[in-house]
Length: 193
Image 1 (cartoon, rainbow, N blue to C red):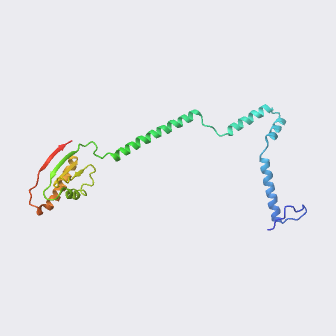
Image 2 (cartoon, rainbow, N blue to C red):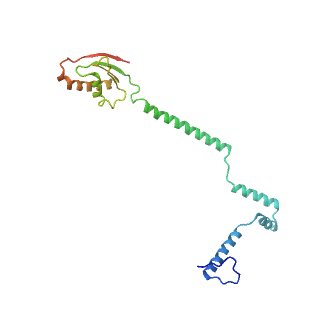
Image 3 (spheres, helix red, strand yellow):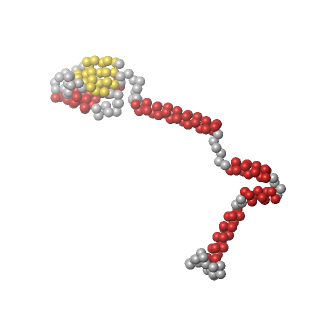
């Protein structure tokens, strides 16, 4: 569709589709202008209707105040700060509880016992390595195999954990018992903390 140049004379004929679009758009613009009114025009209309300028200005101020976004009051800011502070305290307490559960073992209040045992056949370092997979689920059990005493193994944990460690150690010692003829050794010490 061709458009006439903007400087075309008023007598130039326009295509029908273009003429319809031109009239429709002009009508839209006129309606938009009619939907808004200048304050001066409204003041003049109010004055013609017998409304004083003071009353018109007061009404205008009320309408503008009602349309303006509400600013938060000092009290609402204080309430927001209290909620924010309370939420922060609750978060810190919860984080402390979670972290304490992660850092402290499940049996945090259980007394730990140290048990030293002289091994029959295998060196203590080898026994400790063979026991580690069995005791992997027991986080507070520690095994010490000093190099100065190659057949001495020190186990530290709760009484239940010591029972499990002793059972694992007995199985390891039994499997190596055929290779050595030394008699089973009794525990050297049993100290409670």
